Image 1 (cartoon, rainbow, N blue to C red):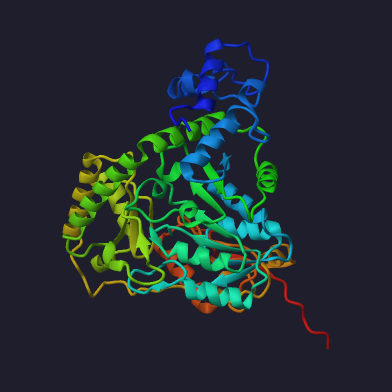
Image 2 (cartoon, rainbow, N blue to C red):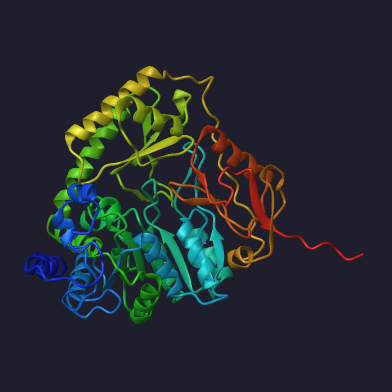
Length: 488
């Protein structure tokens, strides 16, 4: 296919150049009705292609023209049979993926360290999650992937599951042996769904982990915006024919998508596909080179450790994405959250995320030796300002995986009451509690709250980590299932 073409973006530019008189939404009409300061800042070019699904520009809900062409080019670039554009982010693609294969009551096998969008989809679908515990890293304080052995045990117990979901790679860039897992699951004639939110570049370079489509997975939700260069909230859902009905995928995607789709986001997907298809290997090569340079320099700094190839060798740590700089700061006696704030306050650097023990910095096609040099200089300053302090070193704690007492949907829609969070041990929670980023639930609807979970969450709140989910944003109170009293 001719990947120099951008059918959707070209159609938008031609339409804007024709300068038609518009009597349709959006009401700003090429920016003339916009706030003057915003218009000056954002620019007339962007506003001129902020359009809707008029006939010359096709319709994402039933594409037959330039959007269909753009999606076919994307499918070719990503090695898929079908690719669907998402303007609802990868969360929308993940929800579509799960709702396409799960009906109410159906089982789906998922890792426990899934993104909250997976649980949202399970609630919407009324599915029953079968959780697999990810491999836990007690040194770094993070979860890795799931093992093939654990997937086999889950399949043997739940051979009626409608799908198995795998994260590839994790937020921290670690991968299990995806090909081995896919082959195993397919031997049961069950589809494999992949959360590939953090893996767009892996399609385009042999030194990066295997992509979902390369591994033979049936569907993969891929964030093009996170690492590939498109605009925030633009993602794709890649589909392999056979076990998946693409017409149902289109129907579900349409049900979940605004009818006022953003053509700016769609155009950024179209053009980013062109860039990745033509220049993806070179782009990824540059990002890998910059990241490995940073990793080598960081690992010379006292008290800092940036994970690399040495972490590999286990079933759950089969491969890794070197463009993710996971930097362990515990030996400096400070939290990842404190490190994130220190870098912001002292060096005007914003990292992707922090947790109790680590920070995560992403190296992307937008980086240069200058930006990497700024990060290295700042981290060197951090290490000098915070000497290795074993006395103040944090002890790694990883939350226990709670017992699921009700399905997430049953808990979410059950009769509830509000109780003090610190007194909620033993109760069944009816809402999510998670730290975002990365958005992995510590507690999710239907799970039994333990004192260990309470202590872990309170520790995160007290150091200032962004704990979210409950209606009470202060996490003082939590919604739990009303318990029926016995009739005497």
